[in-house]
Image (cartoon, rainbow, N blue to C red; front, side, top):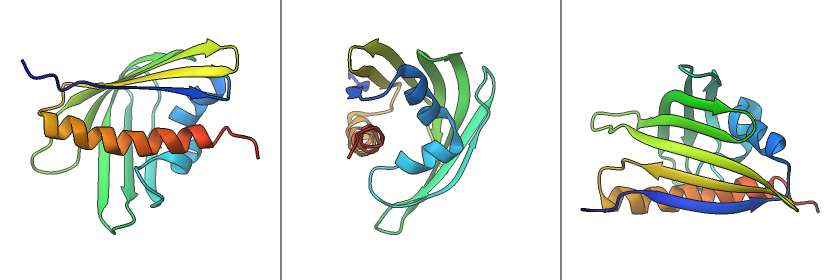
Length: 143
């Protein structure tokens, strides 16, 4: 059996409530979404079980990407789970789960993206999510 699940763990210098807001509020998502410094073009969230999200962004190479899904679990401030699909002909529904745990210096975020269609897809998503989560973490670093 091929393992197509991606798990990333990050420590954030902010409370779980603050990190949860950054994961769910459109104006906050626009600050960290995407693997590079390209802009977020559109963000819509309806953060409740059964609610939908849609995010469109442009990468520095000029390519545009859009993802959407449905919130399956919303437990503020500790957990989000949502279906995940890229816009396009060959889209495949996968699952994103984000768990937040309070730690002494902020929050430990465990990000899991499962049900990806292949190792190649998992590895590509690892690159994208690593860039995005690194940007998310930098939002909470004091200068």
